[in-house]
Image (cartoon, rainbow, N blue to C red; front, side, top):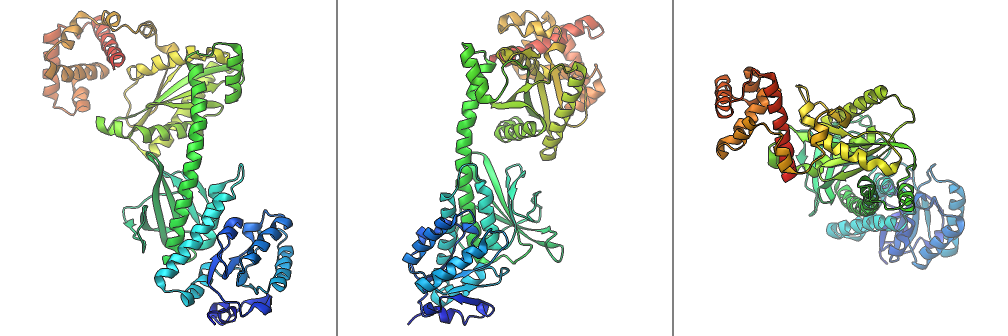
Length: 562
């Protein structure tokens, strides 16, 4: 006869185990072992296994469901059941009494082990007796894969499936685990897991004992759980969709990390990836539906009161409240143009997350490189207080952004307050117009600081925003500046940039040179050259004002022609 239950009891790890019932089955032959972390694991059992459980998988089962599961287990002719008694399962004594009766009825030995004993430590000697190393690893891979797969079958509506996967992972590893998004923001974790993540320069690539599609890193971190203050932390990076990265962090603060743990983590990441992709797909469909409704509202496309009513019900917004539209955009002052384009999606997500974290009563949607916000306003709010609060909120958004990238700067255009959601298209148009020329109104600042422009503060530029005819706008550019705009193509842009900077810096050659990283004499030469080409009198404030307006109009023309 092969490896039997009575042989298993002779293993050192079972020295403290209690045989509670089913002695008639001590000669049952063992053909494998598996852990039960989800009720549906029953369908993956082949027969002859030792089952390891702490009943947590059955915590939500009524006793009739519990009975059905174990009758299915009996039909598979399992060899033995090893369980741990935890305090986090209600009515556990009732369940224990049930399986004691089950043991006698079906001759299945029931063993209780200490709660602190890790199931993977119990699995190891059993699998070692049955299989060689390669097959042992495959068997353990299968039992962890089956558990995470079975777990996916058991998700109910509204359940925190990601947290369930992490809980199972923690129980299998005996170490806390957490996941973070691509911006290293904490999303979920088990008790005792880290809630902040940073990758140190000393982090090294870690290679599991098998081929993996994921990137593994290992670094030393401080942990409250670690006796000596520091422990290993293992990071796994993967993607759930285009440009949407995730991190799993396992902190080995309680138990050393071994090859069996590598297998567990690999299967956990696969389960997390599938579940997060499912959630991402569902969220994308829901967001697309919401965005379509928001787009219709912003463009004033709701043709009837009934359509408008349906739209606001879907968005959860009141029909007759007061609203304002804000449009946000990030700008990377330090990046080259190709970097700005390459990082658009990452920055866009970062901006939207920061806005939704800091603003209350808003609906936000992404639009290319911008985030459009519909803000529900408090009735009778003082405008001065509103501006102060808005500025403070945008500064907090900037703070969140700066913690991720110090070079990113928040800019926002603010439309007027409108009464009734059916009129927000007016506020949307104004917010877009004010964002177009927001840089015009910026003061000289050091470091990345937020800046927002109210359409109501734009003065004469309101009139210019009412036309989309480049030919009509061109008439607002003074003749002197037109000469520069038609100058030699290979020198034109450099001279326009110099003129812009010179006027922005109150005609200071020193500050112009510093801003453009050129020599003072080079800046002076360029300004003299501009004066010679255009005939601009920089001592005439009226003419200088006309040129400044002309430069703004020129930029508006460039934007319209894109």
